[in-house]
Image (cartoon, rainbow, N blue to C red; front, side, top):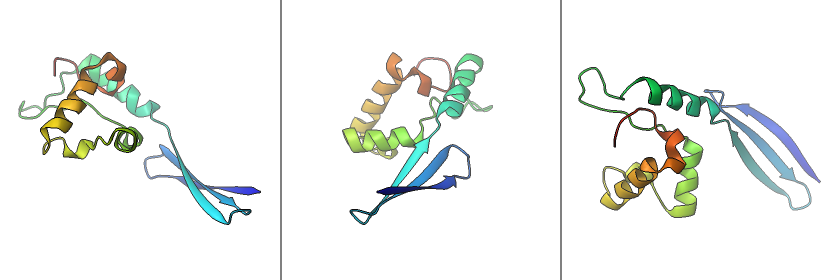
Length: 113
């Protein structure tokens, strides 16, 4: 029999964690459920209302990627987005995703990237 206990939400209120204890196997599993809808809604507002540039136009935000998706890409594809500025192949793959209509909801500003 498995017992489930809610561990509560993270500080942002977007990730709820659960502990699953399998008495038969004597194992504990941690599950995280992430609500990405608020982030995707903010991205939509950004895409339709600004170009992403800072007031000095020195920097530009182009996307906001949920941590759960960053983790999924790392596990399933070996794509470590934190190597974006260090590895040209990683940068190419991430930019390819962000230019794809399949990942449009990740884009947080309008314009060409």
